[in-house]
Amino acid sequence: MPEFKRLFFAIDIAAPPALVCERMLAPDSYRDWTTAFCEGSRYEGRWREGERIRFLGPSGDGMLSEIAEYRPGEYTSVRHVGVLSNGEEDTSGDAAEAWAGALENYRFVPTPEGTRVEVEQDVTAAYESYLAAAWPEALQRLKALCERGAPG
Image (cartoon, rainbow, N blue to C red; front, side, top):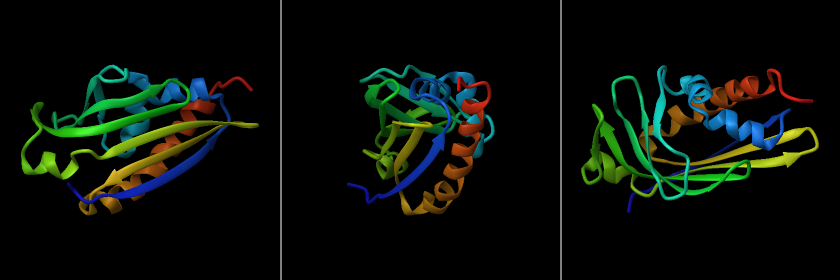
C-alpha cells in the first residue's frame, strides 16, 4: 500500500452550499478553478457514487478515479484508482500503484455567512509541495466564481 500524507485546505465562501458544490463540479466552472493545477484541466464522467471519472489535462494525461461517496451540497469523496497517459487507462503500473486508494474529499459546511469548503487530499511525497501551493489558489478561484452573482 502506498504511503500518503493527507493535506487539508479550507476557505469560507459567501454563497450557499448547493451553489458552491454546483460551481465546484459543473464542467465549465471546474475548468476555471482547476486552472490553478493545470491550464486546460477537465473531467469526463458523472458525479455519481460508484461511477468512474477521468480527470484530464490537455495532453490526455491525468487520473482515473471513482466516486466513493456523493451527497450534493454536503460531501464528495473521490478515490484514485489509476492514471491516464495520452488518454489510456493504467490501473496496475508503478505510477498507478503509487496513487491507488488515495482519497480526495470535499465537504460543504453551512455557515452563517454561506459555506466553508474543506478539502482533504492524500498525496505522495513527489506531489506534496506542488499541491500544497496549488490548492489555495484553486480555492480562491472557486470563491470568486461562487461569490460573483451569489444570492446574498
